Length: 315
Ligand code: PMV
Image 1 (cartoon, helix red, strand yellow):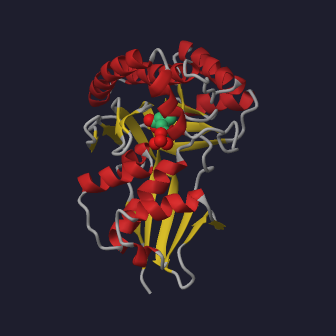
Image 2 (tube, protein in one colour):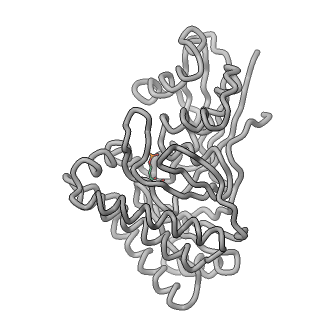
Image 3 (cartoon, protein in one colour):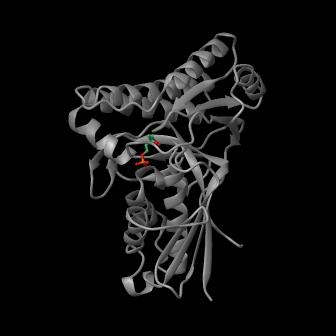
C-alpha cells in the first residue's frame, strides 16, 4: 500500500508577519524573515484508508473543523474521491497551538507529503503558494536556515555567514490560544489605528534585517528581532477588541534578557501568538541565558539550532 511521510520544521520569525493584503491568496501586507529550527518539527504520513477520510493529530482521531481544514487543503492536490480514502497521521514534536507555530510545520509537512502522494509534482513556487493557504507562515517552513517571505509571495533563503544561532523557546503556557492568529491579524488589519505605520516600518525593518543577515551583523539582527516582535504585539494591543497573547511572565523574561544584553550577552527575545518567549542567542552565550532562566525558575525550554527545510523521509 502506498505510504508517504514528510517532515517539516517549526520556524520562528525574526521579522514578523501580521496581516493579509489578500485573504483568498494569503498575500501578506509585510515581508517577513524567519529561521527554521532543527529539533521542533511535524512529521506527517499519508496512506490509504479503508474507513474513509481520517485525520489523526498526535495519535488522536480529530473530527470537525480541524479535520475539515485538512480535507479542504488536500483539494489543492487531488479530487475528493482520492481524498476520501486517505488517512493523514500528523505528529507535532512541539506543543500544538501554543505560539510555537506548529500549524506552520504542520501545513508544510502536509504539502510536501501530498505533493508526492498524489504525484502533483508542483514546483517550489507553486507549492509555496498552496502551502501558505493552510497557514501563511507555513510557506517559510518549506526551507531551512534563514528564510524570507516577500509581499509578492516569493519564499527564498537569505545567505548568511552566521551558523551559530541558538533559539531557546521558553514554555510558559502549553494550552491552546483563545483566538487564532488568522482571526486576530484580520482584526488588526481592519481596525488598529496604527496598522498603516506598522506596515511601513516593517517594510524598512525587513530590508535592514536582510542586509544585517547577509553581513552577519549580530547586533543589528538582535535589535530588529526584539523591535519587530514588540511592534507586532503593540499592534495587537491597539486592535479592537485588544488582543493580548503575552502575559506577565513573558514581560518578565523580556526584562531579564534586557539585563543580560546590558552585560554583553547576546539574548534577544521574540514572541508570537502566545505567551511563550523565544530567545535568539548564540553558541557562545546560550548557556549563560539558560543559567539566568533556570535561576529564575524557568526549567521548561527547548534549545534549537538552525535546521533543514521540509522534506520527504523514510519511516
Ligand atoms: O501563519 P499564521 O497564520 O499562523 O501566522 C502566524 C504569525 C506569527 O507567528 C504571529 C508571526 C510570524 O511571522 O510567524
